[in-house]
Image 1 (cartoon, rainbow, N blue to C red):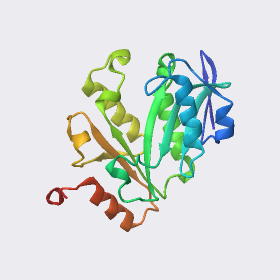
Image 2 (spheres, rainbow, N blue to C red):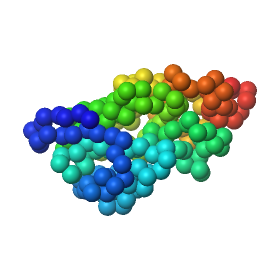
Image 3 (tube, helix red, strand yellow):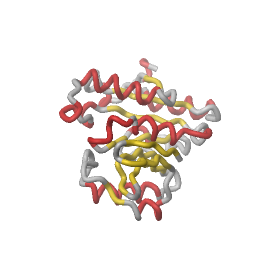
Image 4 (tube, helix red, strand yellow):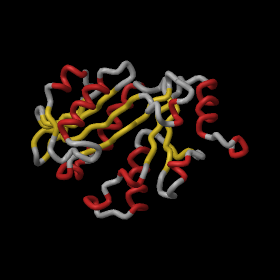
Amino acid sequence: MERLSSSFGEVIIEGPVPPERLAGYRMHEDLDAFRRPAEQHEALVEIAGLPEGRIVVARLDELIVGYVTFHYPDEMERWSEAGMDDLIELGAVEVANEYRSLGLGKRMIRCAFAGDQLENAIVYTTEYYWHWDLEQSGLNVWEYRSMMERLMKTVDMVWYATDDPEICSHPANCLMVRIGREVPMESIEQFDRIRFRQRFMY
């Protein structure tokens, strides 16, 4: 847990938050990038209850002003094909508009990886430009991509090549990955096979 003094009051960064505690919090009305705040709150509680699910939040008292999700890959995406127990998706990072100057995204992600919590996992994130808040941020696609790369690099996630069609559909999209120190070579090789279906690219 981290406590951050701000002009809004004390912001607490904590996680993983158990589902029972998460259910008692409420969502800031601006946290609507993926679905309506009440529905997103339900989704966070559901993810927190999964065996591999992890939710990190930034909150003012019981008001969630930012969150990060970790879970297994969606079964509709190629990353789930191998059924790997040690492949975890860093799914969503969202911070309410007026709190974005506090560096909460970076603080939440660092909290998630603190104390060697994810050294036994391959953690990946897929960055798609159509999920980015270009209008509110005032950034263009490449500036936003650069910002997301810097954010992920704070926990040593790096760019990885792939032939995934969605990622390849726009040059600003990217796959970023962090391989924990305790991940066995078999898992790394399995992940490489998922990254490239076209074997000549591998």
